[in-house]
Length: 163
Image (cartoon, rainbow, N blue to C red; front, side):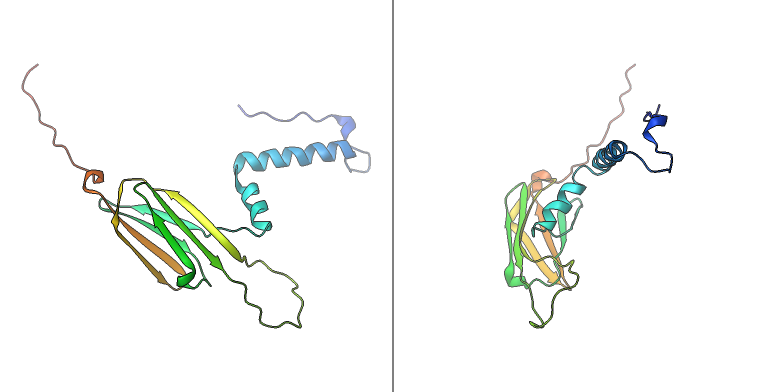
């Protein structure tokens, strides 16, 4: 069952415009609706507008390893730092701003610059001695080998004859 908000006929003005209170209410409703659809979407956008940013990640897992791919275009590999524990991976670094012409004003900018740090909880126990990182075409790929105890073990099921 869906809930439908009640609207008063008096909230509408004759010329089709809403009263200021009704406009405020619809804006608050829109904010709550967007928060329920993407709980941290609005928060992450506002944090990014403060100059903080974080690269998007993909984490995948197989029987023997966990692979983390991070999009970090424009970052020199020497400006990246990777720290790993048995259950967490931390990627941090800095994207430095490049200024091409000092005599031009910026009209529109969507590029993010500055420091970032992401800590990713890993889905299995990792052997910190067997971690490798590769940077190619703006994508950082970190391959983490699982510990032998973290690998899935298939258990055969035996049928019994008793009833």
